[in-house]
Length: 129
Length: 199
Image (tube, rainbow over all chains, first blue to last red):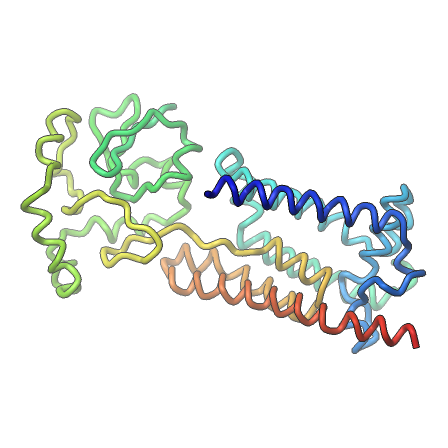
């Protein structure tokens, strides 16, 4: 039963990941309007910590990492962390220390601080980042 | 280092330390490894204690004599008492495992009780803090609501290690709800933005 559910999840994740890969590689979010936009930017006009993620993904999938960094630099921290987090969740018994580290209170508080700092910094220095 | 444990009145093992983290080990689960003269409660094995990240205080509470627990939980322990005396096939297995019952283990059966926090102070596993999802929601969907989710996610572990299992479950649930809220809000506003840009 659980094996069945795990297989379905694995298939679903693969399908979604492939779709994301294909769509973001082919279409530039800046030029096509069917991509979702940021709610808080719509309301406040300020960049949120995640603004530019789609454009960054498009740039990175087309090989332009400098532009990706320019669109949203925090992704270069967030994505590796999330990869570690998901990997340690899936392989909890093989990677107990990694699991404890990524699921720790310290990790949560650090992410909070870094996200909020990033949010503030990118709005004060909009053209640097 | 290989470890053996007794679960549900049956000896199991050998296991590596990392395998134990996914097993229903309680602080009073009998454990043996090479070098020990006899079985000891899991709480007394330092590396197992660290594996479960619970502070020493929690285990100490559970090793109080049963008389105290019976006084405070009268109603709940009524049904446990008969099991101590009858059908307690434990007696005959003591000889074969060589572990003694009189070492301060709480009396009672060793069946693992899942999910509900049981009345004898035992805590089930720590609920997931959904930190990864909270960060993703903050970055991708809606920042203010996602931040709230991260705040709740950060409290799950501290509440659990303080012994507040119910609080940890509540925090974990609230983190999940705020993640869902942020996704929903993002999905609701996205079409408006698309329409807005088309006008």
